[in-house]
Amino acid sequence: MNKLHKLFKPNSVAVIGASQKALRAGHVVMRNLLQSGFGGAIMPVTPRYKAVSGVIAYPDVASL
Image 1 (spheres, rainbow, N blue to C red):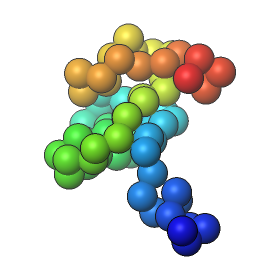
Image 2: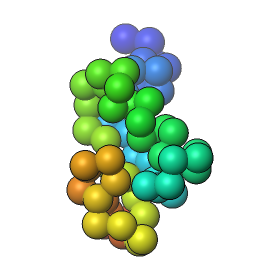
Image 3: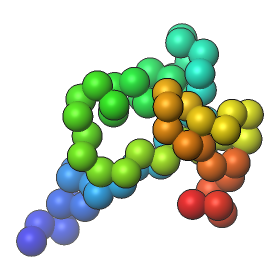
């Protein structure tokens, strides 16, 4: 297996700084992952929201 496989085809993605505000990078990344049909776990990380784009959020990286 190629050593870069996990980087380019991850099983999960943590979105640090996920946001509900439409023009923020964290919101755009979440939207793109959800709309692209990414098959792995999407874990938004933000202390500001309990969920982002309908996905339960984690308050910090240690909580993942």
